[in-house]
Amino acid sequence: MIYFNYETDFELANEDKLANWIITTIIEEGCKEGEVNYIFCNDEYLHKLNVEFLDHDTLTDVISFDYCIGKEVHGDVYVSVERVRDNALDFKTKFEDEIHRVIIHGILHYCGYKDKTDADAELMRAKEEYYLSRLD
Image 1 (tube, rainbow, N blue to C red):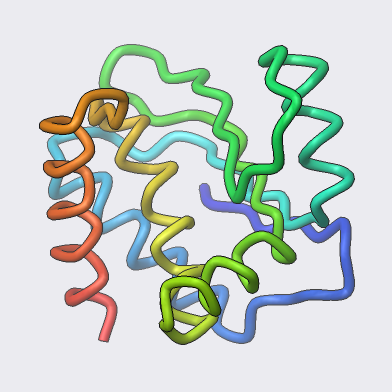
Image 2 (image 1 turned 180 degrees about the vertical axis):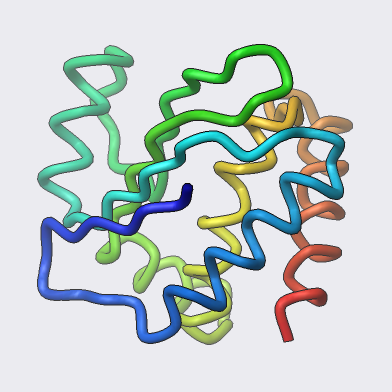
């Protein structure tokens, strides 16, 4: 199951469509749907988690906690709506496109994709683009 939770005034307008897209992505990547919680929050909320759990004193747009069991996808994906808005401006893209990119980014991590090296980041970006094209 895919769950959407809100610690801010922001709410997704199309939760059912997005949940189906996420599930389709998981299956297409050869994984099995488990329980994934998305928590939409602000910079302060996510910064606190970043410091407390990852020892990173920086702002970020997304943090994912992976609880996968083999190929069964489980996890919590925290998204700073503020950071996504700022990134959309910086990257000259629509907010909706950027929030969808962050949503699928967390799932791709659970499906085994990394983004620490240049090559891994390039593959991750290609996968994001592929699945974003499938949303429309």
